[in-house]
Amino acid sequence: MRPALFPIPVLIVTVVLLIRAAILGKQWQIYIFKPVSTLLVIAVALLSLLEPGQNNTYMAGVTTGLLLSLGGDIALMFQEKRRAFMIGLGLFLLAHIAYTVAFMLPGPGVFSARDLISAGILLGVGVSFYLLIRPNLGTMQGPVIAYMVVISVMVNRAGSTVMSPVFGAGQAFMILIGAILFYISDMILAANRFWKSWRYNRISLAFYYSGQLLIALAAGCFM
Image (cartoon, rainbow, N blue to C red; front, side, top):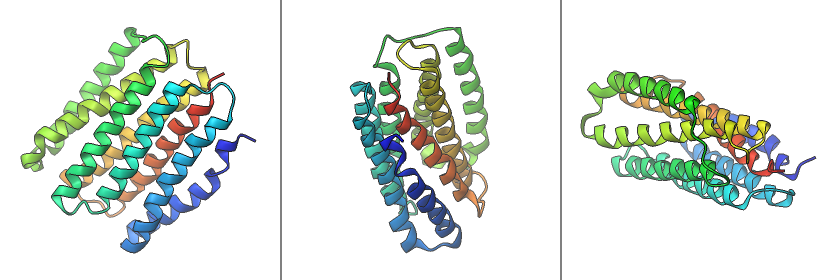
């Protein structure tokens, strides 16, 4: 059994408890389970160092992204305060940049017609979603647009791993699905904050941690 798989059962438990705490409004439990869950994902990535054939460039990029995500997670636990929200947004923006670099640098950059198609789809989704939430953005228009652009580029570059000779088919699939799940989780959070409030919006945490986990697991799949 791969060492990187060992933390996953514990991660499933902590994420379930985190979602439950968020829905029930038990803030002190969120303060515990959220950073612990992210630390477990970081452990998954680091345990990939014990596996043969892992790529140091990808590993460094993913670990950097996860550490920035940890900071973002902690900041967003206090997102009712504008400054904390902006710090969290900035840290996650940097995390997406780190992931983008990780997806591109392990091997030669690959750009194909598929990238243009996915870019067009992401542009259409992004513009439509922006028009939906724009009336409630206020002074947040600039930061939100920047964030949407960066996360869309991250998903686009995740898709490019499918054509890269450096990434195996299974690894590219994990990276792409992980990036899409991360994207969906952020869309749910943004819709809840800037469009319509939804009591069960914290189900986004299931998408978020599933996405982060897949990206972390891919670190141990270089052969």
